[in-house]
Amino acid sequence: MPPDRRGPYHPIDCTFHDRLESFATLRIRCRIAFDEPDGNRREVVDRIRDVFARSGEEFIETSAAGEIRLDRLVRVEPEEAG
Image 1 (tube, rainbow, N blue to C red):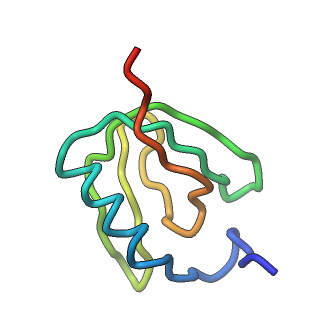
Image 2: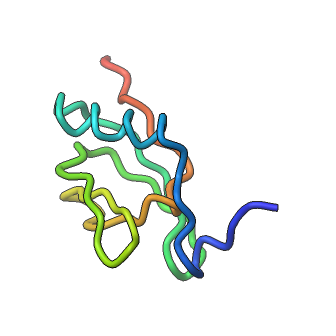
């Protein structure tokens, strides 16, 4: 059963975390799908400005969506050039 993304933080896979840090470092525009705290799914296209931890939880920061808790991420993919 998947974790409740509105409740306590659940750490993400280290490989996925490393990938997020790579996207941030290389300033790659990504399509980011995530669940908001109210349960609604949202998608933005933006660059990840930062990957950071605070109070035992990990986040990414984007201009379009602000801070997103990592365990609320559904999908993060580089945007197709086109």
